[in-house]
Length: 215
Image 1 (cartoon, one colour):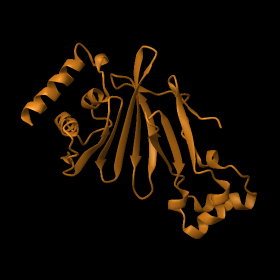
Image 2 (image 1 turned 180 degrees about the vertical axis):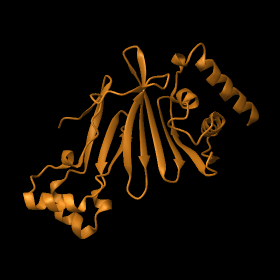
Image 3 (image 1 turned 90 degrees about the vertical axis):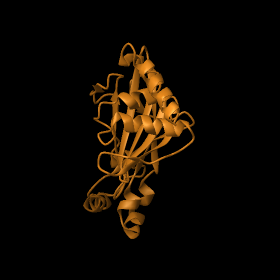
Image 4 (image 1 turned 120 degrees about the horizontal axis):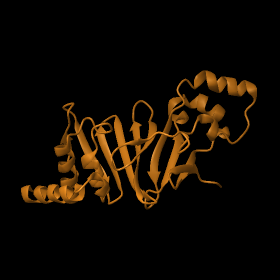
């Protein structure tokens, strides 16, 4: 294990030379993330996680909160990390022109999953334009018109309009958004509104932008 760990570190160091712009896999970018997304995991933690995963083991690693984190999925362009029992992070690396872009989905898992999406370059500088991706709202899931009375009822019971995002597809190149109403509302309340909602919205990459898939 010690030799394998050395080889992992050596490979990552080679990937970082002469600059972070040479990072070649999502594991490289995971290792050099400055702590904005992974404040609980040191670089040593992350290298250990990658090392164990590449050796065929999913091992929980102690983090800075004396909790445990685990690398759940990893390939050259995608990873999924359970940073704590209540937080999941997904990262997808892609090429846009001559640039490498990292799309990050952070999901809080309790009491109902709620996500946010950010995009970064290889120096972990964030793309801040709101024109690149519009986080879906509950209105985006409505497919059947509601009466004003029913809409008022929905707004009264829907205190927190939570939306979960996750990567889908064989190459993790689709982002699926789902609303949390069925989990958030009591079953009898959800039945009143269920017919008005589609279960999910899919998004695809279009350069730097992330757009809804037209059906």
